[in-house]
Length: 140
Image (cartoon, rainbow, N blue to C red; front, side):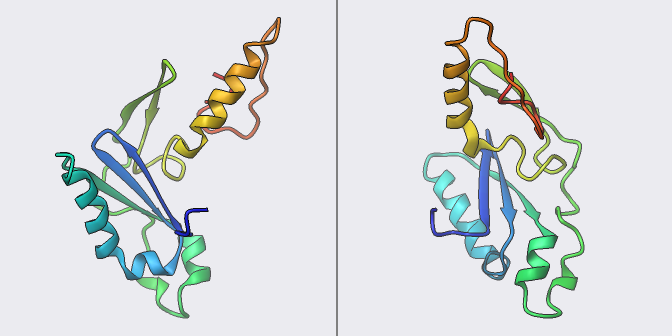
């Protein structure tokens, strides 16, 4: 792993979806936000953050009684219906950064999708069963 258990950041254009599942991330939220913003400002991008909490994980991780202040999993000012277009390997996906499953498209699975695509391409009659999927990205 990357040594940052409980923090996932997926970037869709100028939107960074931050998935929080650990006490340390909430405790150091401003530092995490400033760090993400500074990385993008170095290359001239003004990134917008969508802070998404995993209440189930936080309730297990937070010291007793501290989690009640985090009633919402997503910040109130973020529109859960806002969509952005993502292109991956020539395919178009629509992602809802504040309203979709976790961070959206599971960007950490890109390499696995490419591998599956290359293996399926070797079949005479290509077929894939994509069980328990969110976007169907492995089957597409």
